[in-house]
Length: 177
Image 1: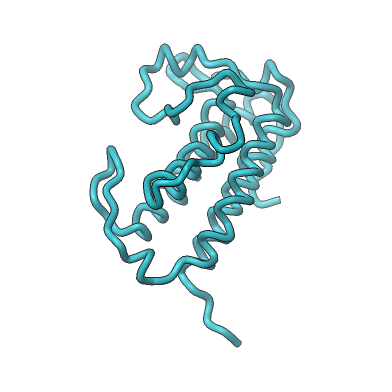
Image 2: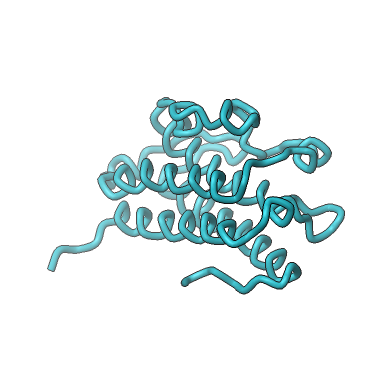
């Protein structure tokens, strides 16, 4: 039996994260998508958009200086959302004011990110993952550390916020289904 690589583990976990992000949107109404659980909370849509945009930007742009899925497939124009912003460091009033497309459309973007990043992660060599890369605002770390921390840990934190917001709205938890 072949040994599972770090890239394969990352592909699996980032894929699960993105699956859960998309699934958390699909049974919501457009109004529920914009629900904020507290005055200082982001909307469900913002949280899931932010996770997908971060995955997309880190893997394609920050690591390899390629166009992310967001730009390559014209989502910024289709959705009428910022071209380069992904939510990191965005002033709260600006984040709260963003209006997102229908749940299935936003979930479709998340699915497209997954389709783009999973094969790339699966094929990542240990040398590629050990390469130190600077990413603002997190600094210089190995690509693997950025992936584990910024994508897997940070992304699942945002998914937890959405799980709580969904519960307030009366929806069941979709994580792990």
